[in-house]
Length: 178
Image 1 (cartoon, rainbow, N blue to C red):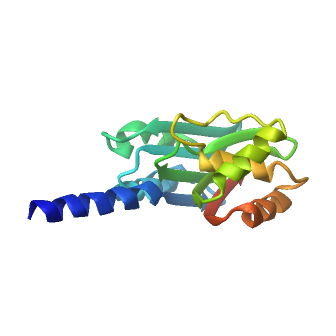
Image 2: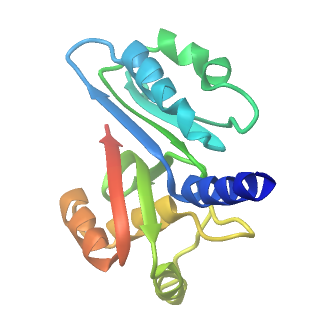
């Protein structure tokens, strides 16, 4: 019986490494409450990090917090009071969403990705002089890598297509721009 528990725990741990919840809202009215509750709905994934980004009159508002030992609702309640028509939310084991200001404009990016060739891509980015700010001692942040690939092209659409063609593995993404 104890061996069965250990095997179940190990299987759940492996699944947890790749499970991410993405949620996006685009509406003519305010999206904050829908974003809050829709993102919270993914809390059962037992993610370590949560984040949201919402378009406001001042630009993109982003908040990220570690939620390993707390509920999403306790860390993100204030977003229900924001005013904006578009937003993305993510629960993940990586810090997300990534916010970028660049030649492509301002945007927030969240992904559910497993980039199997990440070491090759990171090496190429370093060779091209690209810095990574979200990398940890464990591994590069897959969402940041996808973002850096998107920035190599002259439009967001071309960049997404380029990133999807470069990635060996899988990647679903939500991109929120101003």
